[in-house]
Image (cartoon, rainbow, N blue to C red):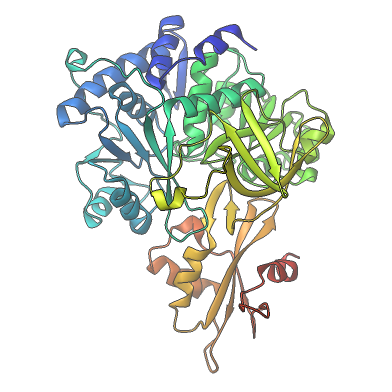
Length: 499
């Protein structure tokens, strides 16, 4: 383990980590985006100026500030600025719409809301007004700025809750997951140390920075002092030029990313897609073993996959020097400080990277067992050498491209459709997405034919975010149910439609 990174990993707060890295390597780049470069020193200095501007707006230690911004240098500056003040941040995925955004703002009691204005054809400022957001300001090209001399002392306690991340979980409304600076630093340290990274690497962030993986990655950059290329919009083959131009050595995100890179590689066999790439890494969705072998064989790089969730951003991670069998069939090993306990086949976790619970105290009830272990709802077992194998989930959650989707939220909307009498939403294995969303419905007698196009149009009209829309529709005469409480037997639907 890199001694400098290990020492930095003991930082009490995220801002302390930003400051200490800037003191060590002020001129080294931290973010690359198009023709723009931000150094570690500039990250510190510009974040302090932004913090002063926010302070002038009324942001104080403990003030809840929500932000819904794309993966952009300004987004990283804003999050560092809020960390400097000691505000409570509530990142919101930029693809969320009125339903989720309004709920997150109300539940978090956010006093300020940073938006990108009109972005990718959608007016976020207008949405903020519709949902009654307070303290709305745009933070896309310009950020608030001021004299850092007005700032209070930097925060010293990294164990206070300063982050509210949102996950769909198993209910129709999102859950606010409570994190501290120390829990995020612990998660990012886990990822960085497992991947055997160094200051010579060049990373990439092609997923939403508002995802908890954004904080993971920022910590990783600060610990090891290497830069990442930011992608505000990721699509292949268009993004390949940036990977090649900057000499990216490590890329990924989730199973969907592996599949996209592999598909592009197959268009040009014998020619390495990204000449400098040595490692694909990620998590957040099931990884078929055959995908691991295909990436290593055809792309000429290593693939490591891990296990994490919004509640615990990094639990286990495959290491580049693991055996091919372990990398293909397991989620890797837990780091020092992460305890895994298997109780009746269910995975339970304890360690510094574990969240403090949920924003709604009722949701936190029963989440931790009597020994302080988080009850995940995931099923699995540990191998003899400590690798974790996941075998399923108790939670009724669909993980598509690394994002959690609540089946119940979609089902609730489908039940209100006049042409549907009952509905079940399931996740089906998908090579490219990890899982795809499948809606299985019953229709009343005499109802007209229901098409997937009509169904998704209806759900869009109800305000459902595009990434949650079903990709498959199955109409059945009767949904399979048990004989006691008449609950729908979703496993039978998965068996029937997984082909």
